Image 1 (spheres, rainbow, N blue to C red):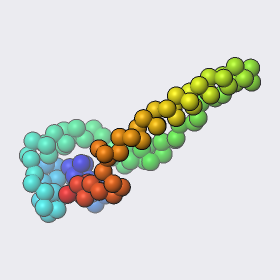
Image 2: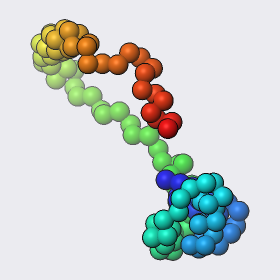
Image 3: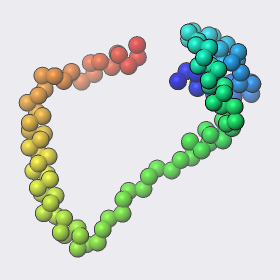
Amino acid sequence: MEYVYAALILNEADEELTEDNITGVLEAAGVDVEESRAKALVAALEDVDIEEAVEEAAAAPAAAPAASGSDDEAAADDGDDDEEADADEAAEAEDAGDDDDEEPSGEGLGDLFG
């Protein structure tokens, strides 16, 4: 991911996206640079307009919720919902007894940050 960040930094600074420039940014950040990854990134982004790609990603609309059916279908499904709720409650009750394997809340978060 840091290679992509380096490309974004270079783009924002209006610098040319080259292997040497990516390597320089990554080394300045203290990253052990793999030359093959830098070369692959430059090749992959050769024909990409980074500004346009960032704008498209930022402007991507959220998915709309699924449309509901008619009232008749909803009435017919009401009985199924009760059965599903009972099954869900039974599954939750079974899971409640298996708390021995779970870590207390908050533990393990340090692993995310190194």
